[in-house]
Image 1 (cartoon, rainbow, N blue to C red):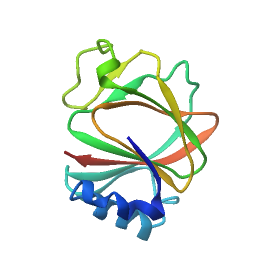
Image 2 (image 1 turned 30 degrees about the horizontal axis):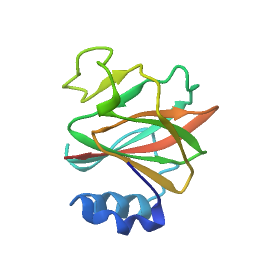
Image 3 (image 1 turned 120 degrees about the vertical axis):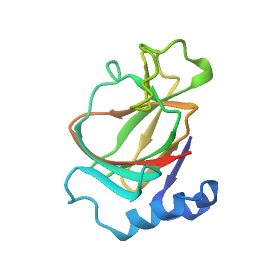
Image 4 (image 1 turned 90 degrees about the horizontal axis):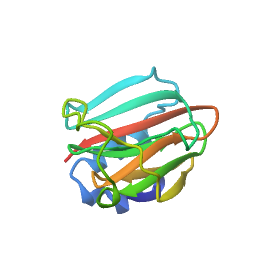
Length: 148
């Protein structure tokens, strides 16, 4: 898991060949006003989900984990909390892993909470189970999906 400011993204772009393309796109485009939905940058290898959501309380949000994608969370409206717990500390998922949706959900409690502010990003690898969208009110955010 990596938390950083978007202006410092160049420090992390060498970690995956598609990171630079993703960060260049979000820096060059105002995504605060585009319709919610998917922006495809490189087929299923790199895309951005623009999400408008109501944030929820920590006690109801589940941890999620992915196998095929790295997530980069970028809040656009307000600070949100994202819970974190390493997969090695989790029990069984609530249901079998959903291969088509690339997602498993867990009800384990989170080990730590990270504030992610507007202008920052949180990069989560498959071993980083995470519980996004914790807070109050509406959130517009980007979830950049980068195929491993």
